Image (cartoon, rainbow, N blue to C red):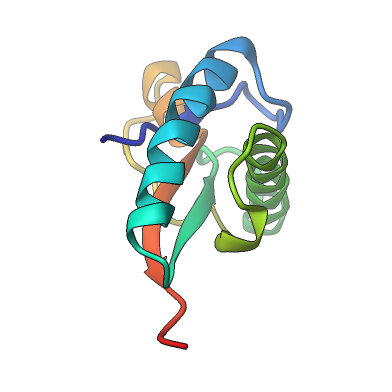
Length: 118
């Protein structure tokens, strides 16, 4: 199962309709991954486009991750196994200064982490 990024509007952290659809699909895959790997955690990475200060974008990325995490927990994903990190504008997916590229950078991305063994 594949997990897709959730995208956000410029300078926003609320989950738009397209992101709700993506996150709902992601929830099924995430529940399956977490069931198959009992020591795993899912890392939600908050990303922003290049506009704004580094400090502002770290906060915005954090708000995006928090919104996605809350949404996933509300639809049945174990929130205790979702970790959040904000990279702000420091890890862009696309490096062109265009709206199309900036949209690709305004996202929550998922990565697999491990809690270790019990």
